[in-house]
Picture 1 (tube, rainbow, N blue to C red):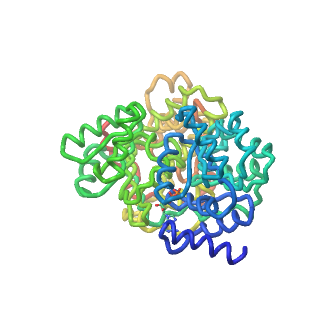
Picture 2: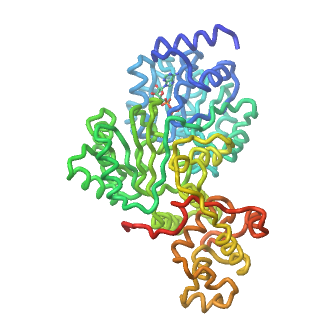
Picture 3: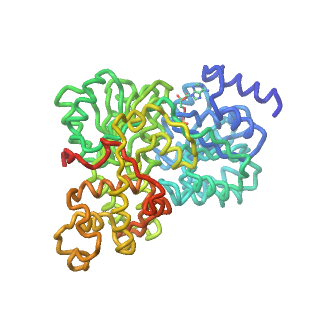
Length: 522
Ligand code: ADP
């Protein structure tokens, strides 16, 4: 790229945003876009994706179209740009028709550099008419993972983007941006948008200022109270999975004097934005929210994100947890795990009217999320591995890295589990396997004729719950793998076969080994 283009981009960065230099990945993406090359940009939440299209928008002739999934955020995004004196607007269904035609006219006059739209708008006749009158230089697809069925947030309306791009007569540059692309999602995007490998710019997913912790078997309420008590002046987000739970936590915390505001889809628009504004402007230190909160919110000083319940996918978890520490300062991400949450999520998937394939994918993602809570590996490393970024580096500070407990050899018990799975020819799931091993007198085992298998009662000195947890750990460490959907069964992997042959030993950290009964609050 010519020096002058880069120089011009740097000038805009300083003059408009007041930043001295580009962050990792930004420069490479902006260079490609200014050279007219279709590009995929992958950066973690808070990495600075918006500048990757905003700066080119200011330097390219004509208009940059930003396709964004959330109508409710467009106004905020446009207001923020207008405050920087960047001429930007949005078109969506919230506008009255007279307001819409005023905006159309101004767009035609070339007044705006950026126009935000939801994907549904692309095929509107009036919008297609408008396009005939403007020069479109760049199309930025925000949250591009919504295009892929493999993404955690697939949106059918995003599917029409690629055909729309093929049909428009103008020669435009395309920039697809996302924070949560697994290898599969990235391949989908490349295929949909015909983007070559060398034009995929990924800064990696690592967030080195975040400390991840998984807390298992704690009394959630007590844990939360003491966690918050020692972080009195810090700003944080508490995610819970239901509206009811959000309300309960909110009342509990506000009754003991915490500066807190709720946020969920059951509140009206006005209440929600009031809470959101209070949180953003530090009038409320803590926001208790369902996953409806957060997309597009740019609050830099969030010091912690506490997940009161298990999210359904690693993508969703990392996106939510990633809202901590956008300013680069050290921040904490804590997840409170309880087996009940897995059951709730499984139930919700079961009840959904999704296709079988889709359900199967959701079960798999939930299993990978659950495995995150049971893995012994560095938590940051686990997440990076999930997104296809393999590294031997550990973060040195997550709850697994700082685990000081002695490793206990559980090879014998693991071999018992694997033999049992093998004995029943990999036809049953975790609960049945645990019941067989502890020698449960459950009627169902008798009916299925499982009380006569040779592994029946082999671990009778263990509780069923502890064996189930051992199975979870073995699953997280990929010795066994779940298959099937509504009735997940478990199968052995090559790693388990090596353990059975005595070639590999299974070591588990003492405090994670299922020897102590858990204290549950539900
Ligand atoms: P993303 O969309 O990737 O989650 P944003 O575009 O919202 O992230 O940027 C996150 C924060 O980082 C914003 O406050 C933004 O102003 C800031 N930021 C972006 N680029 C830079 C930069 N080069 N130098 C300093 N801060 C930056």
